[in-house]
Image 1: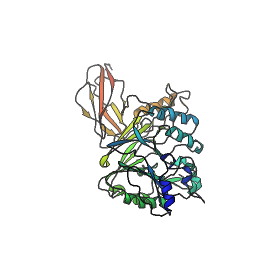
Image 2: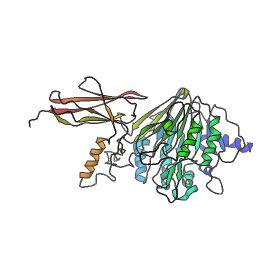
Image 3: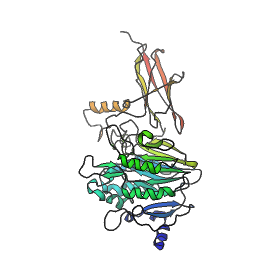
Image 4: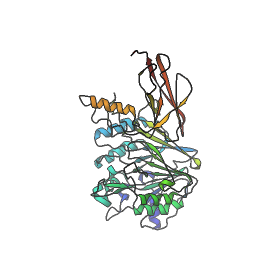
Length: 458
């Protein structure tokens, strides 16, 4: 046993997680969970346990070390064709090559859209970025009708569906949180298997609590209105395991929208501070839909008005971190999407407003606007669909020919939309609107547009 352990631990990083190690002979029962330990941290001694929850520690060079390190995070590439693979390559991956000093990558599931034959292609494109990469499977990566063998194709093409990485700045665990429900609708629910709980129960107590603990998964821990995302008992059991850790971040995807969720006692979380879950948007946006641009890539705006793109997680010492969202191929790195009327009647009742979609905003975000350099005025957070996407929906409705392969999604309520009433008592002419939001990590971010006031008679 000792000789076998030493051999596995001395494997180079590129060979540390072979797909063949994802299952054991005689079925789809998971093998021991691979845990990569970055140098120069001490490699934990093997305890000889090979039952459920067993751990295979493996060595890797230091990546998440120093004063800080960046992690690139993708949600839902969700390709269904070779054309989609090409969109993913040209829209997301290729523009990032050599641009960001990232040291690790995470994909939070739904690499493909029920087309397992495309899994190797997505992996090749992703890993062309040249950094170590961890993948969580999503419901569309699995054969949900196969029950316990649902993740067999994913493991064969990608690798283990549960794995972890221990580093000086953070400890990261990637979890398959899709529980198949064969014959039911929907055919899955969020949760964890018993062998995953057994692993967490063995692994978590070994970790220092002075650094960030990151959980990467596909299905969010929170429930959406009218929709059950995650099994209550599993969430409560996971929260109990996480409660002793003062620095925890949950990363999830699946919804093809974006929001920050802060778990509190009302959700069963008993930690000293609310548990932050960042449910980030999709690399494919709304399934590679919408009108194509000059490069032949679909608009892909998500149903809440967030542009498709990727996130960057910056790890810091002492358990601190920062998050940023970047729209795909946006040279301006816009953080706010604005919508305002082009012209209003001078003197009309001020019933029309400017809307600001603050992509990284939440309930605590302060958003303000001003006109023509005047005083900053507060904007009100509203639970409404993004008006820019609504306008795109109307253009699709009114078109007499298809504007794209798939239409943009029907606009849904955005969790990060603000409104301010535009003044109509100013002089006739064009007026500049400025909006600023105070991003939790970046500080002030701004955007601007304009509207015109025209004189009119009854």
